[in-house]
Image (cartoon, rainbow, N blue to C red; front, side):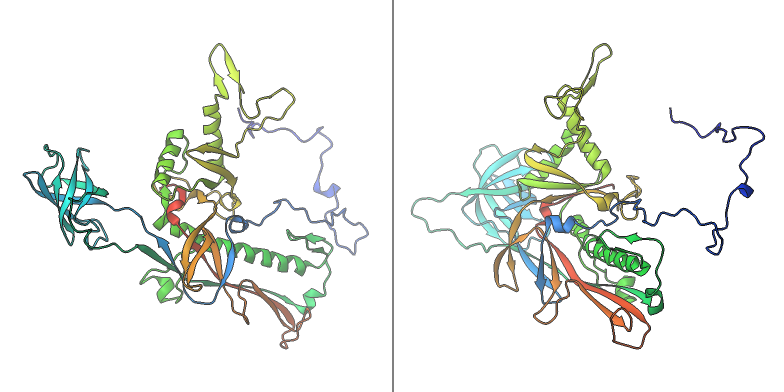
Length: 471
């Protein structure tokens, strides 16, 4: 049971001796002869406060010299339609009208053999195509008993072809299908300003920052923290960016276009697990089966928040039989972690990964845990559609057609493109203006440190990613 705050505990050791405010020095004016006992070193109570590193781990950065990034991704090799309505089914033949979204003409030709299954019941037949025009095909069934009737909505895929002796070849040909995607860079800016007089003021607190800067000049801390904050925003903007929709305030009032961040790309072109936390092996089987239908990348990294990390650890521990507590004969830690467990070793209660069809490596993502960013957001399943618990990222690279290079190139699934030419590099610009701090660019009695970057992220093969979220 948690220790309650009530009833409280007494601080007075006796009834007559009471610590009053008049017994202690409260005026620490340095003109007073009594000085405080001070700690000069600033205490780093939050540890490393930066959250960037995700894109450095999984991606790369490369230059671009255009306002738009375009790339092509391979389409499917084989042909399958899932919304085909049957009609005129009689006498061993039938007609099917294809109504799949985006289909303008059937990529099925005369002489090809097809598998046909009714979506509602699962009954099926096999047939050969005898006529094809537009989105309508006519087939002759191989079976004498046809299970498909008029108005059935069916799935059709090609599995081969068959021709009689002495006939001509296949009529028509198929062109390779590509899917084209675009993204545009956004400009990020920040600034730090300090007057020349304050730069000459020394403090009594020795400051420090995550990049190792130390000293007694307080403006150094503020400048370095501005720099670290901007570096974090360069990454989080690539993760969170969204394009401005037509008629939106961002487009009409602010006149900015936005960009496609990683979360937006996976939400719209990838796979989304909407139940927040996959906690059972059956949940992961569902994910594996979806990956089977996509690129089937062998190795994947799951970047997760603490809840998802613990959920995976708990699932794997349960599969291991690590903690079975029967009423009479409880057994704990039978084979948990290392197999030579003993009473003197520290038990590792976490897992770094597992294999279930594919290899899944687990990594904590500080961005999802940090309370000043996505950490601690609501996880009410009915309303918290923006609460992300993790992201599955395929490892390795993929082949795409790069318009700038004019040829196929290997690219990481996630990578950043920044604006750059031989004379202007906008990957990460910083410059000083004013008349203090070594700058002599104006009569402003201050130092202004400016930061700028122009970049976007390319999410290649988003169909291989999985976004874990609520709602």
